[in-house]
Length: 118
Image 1 (cartoon, helix red, strand yellow):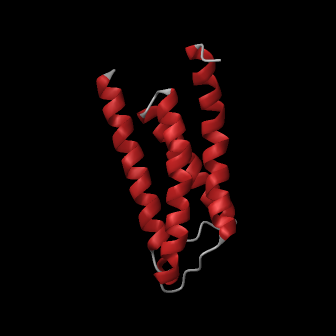
Image 2 (image 1 turned 180 degrees about the vertical axis):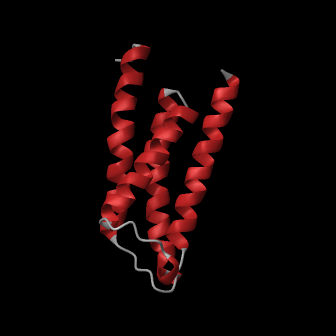
Image 3 (image 1 turned 135 degrees about the vertical axis):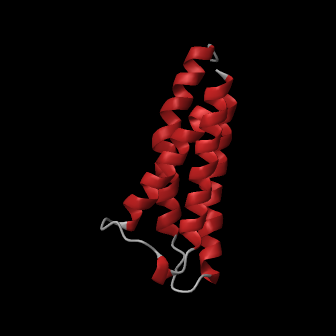
């Protein structure tokens, strides 16, 4: 069990680092997937949320991720103001938060129900 937790934490950390790097690349260097950037934001944050939920498999872990991952998205949007060819958009931070919420809210509900917390 410990090995699985360690691997999931490495996957989570790698995903978070990838999101940071991709978010701070200059606009000219940014790869395009051919879909809306809002979908890219939602998918990236949903993926790191899922990895985070596996890495921190408690109700408290899910709550912490539910706060910290959207905060990361907001911070990166602000940081993009200093990156050539990038723009900061509130809609991107909303898409980040939507991706986090779509994954973590159901997980949080399940963890709360299974722990008997009322």
